[in-house]
Length: 210
Image (cartoon, rainbow, N blue to C red; front, side):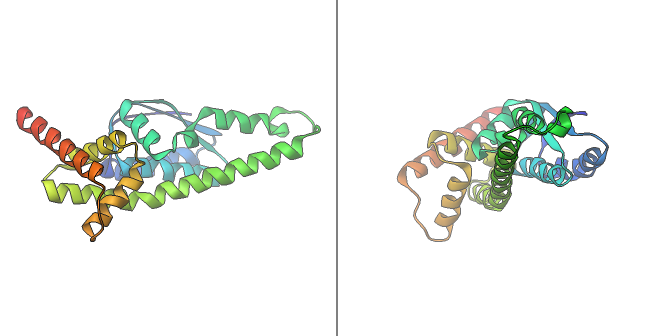
């Protein structure tokens, strides 16, 4: 079953989409194919919606596959290391490893394939849980930037992403550093410079846009 999502994937949109997407997953289908090429903006709330949907599908023995995505979605999947959780390759490997789904009888090596599939599933679930656990810290870091520099939610998110890319730091690690700095910890000088530069660019862009 294919589902096309357009617009923004943020906290407000997630609240409106959650029940509809969960209803779609509950329908008699093996996998949900998500087309996110029309998503203009996606933050941690949007990612959390996708991860929750993925977890809901796993509990029913189903898969969520992102078949197409916009640059905004691509970026957050890369930053959080969650791209593989929504890949078509993982679903195809599961089908190949399932002799009943293929209509074939047992063969040598099926037990090994099953064990490997279970191991991959455990890794998948661990990644899913880590991504969901880091969301509050990332949201808190974004709130800190919004409060400190009077940025909009979208601008603060863009600043976080820019700093993460320029310093080659995982998004959740950067968020932890920013939260720690507010609580009295030190912030690396390189990160301080990137924060100042990213905020300055964002402020200048907003002023020129106004």
